[in-house]
Image (cartoon, rainbow, N blue to C red):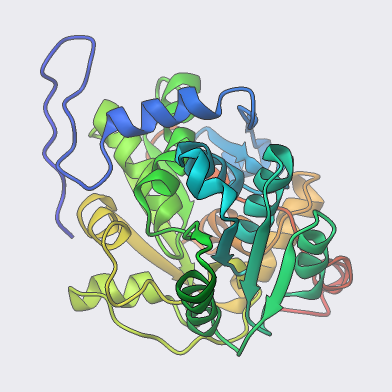
Amino acid sequence: MTKPHLANVAADRPAEPPVPVALSDIEAAAARIAGKVAHTPLVVSPSLSRLCRQPVHLKLETRQPIGAFKLRGAMNAVLALGDDRRRHGLVTASTGNHGRAVAYAARQLGLRATICMSALVPANKVEAIRSLGAEIRIVGRSQDDAQAEVERLVAEHGLTPIPPFDNPDVVAGQGTIGLELVEDLSELALVLVPLSGGGLAGGIAAAVKAWRPEVRVVGISMERGAAMAVSVAAGRPVAVVETETLADSLGGGIGLSNRVTFALCRDLLDEIVLLSEAEIAAGIRHAAREEGEVVEGAGAVGIAALLAGKVSPHGPTAIIVSGGNIDEAVHRRIISGAAG
């Protein structure tokens, strides 16, 4: 995979990376969303540190008001809109957490929001979005089906789309996590990031590598329908079949006309690792039993990758625990060992 070559132009500021989202965009996003999203804690994991013989830290995006990192990108994208576009109402396609983020941002700002999802989105995530006052539309059995409904609503009713990942403002918002990592862990050597459409992984990589180009950033996904992994391997965006997985938030395609996140992930990720369903379940169990954290499948993949020995840290490591919005019954079954 191509590695970026970033050089500092001044002693106190890194150069802008040659990618669709620049460090200045991410810094502007951090200023825009300050006070509206949480600067989440970075905590040491004693159990994983012992396992890896390196300091391992958990970046707990589960502490965001909606229980997931998606609030950063959604809030930045909505705040970046002009008043006229906001007044038309917001619309998005989501596998759950982005929809919840858009619904939350809309409620905070007094806006209308419509969230389009496929039948594969877990019921607990659908109900959480409905509780925020958004209109829900369940369409088809894939993220692509939900996105087609978004495009129809934009064309026919003039709603303003807030894309789940392939949007510079969304990516810049997610990239603010990278700024916090560099600020909070000066010796950072490795970042493990859940990988789906690439907004989170691409944004974090752009921020971290701008300041610390030697830091390795590894994207972690599931074996079932890992669209970005398949696309990077092919050298172009490709379609994949979306199937059920414990890491449901990582499902969906990246869009064949992807403008932003494919290039970021292709150029800035050092490695992509895929996990089995059993490995993801082990990560969820470890988070509950050893870390005292309720974590959804997508949020547990970094932990799972270490437990499975698929990533070997060689210095202080940060795991992005991206979300905790897992169905309670599913979580109980996994913790009991009845699933995965």
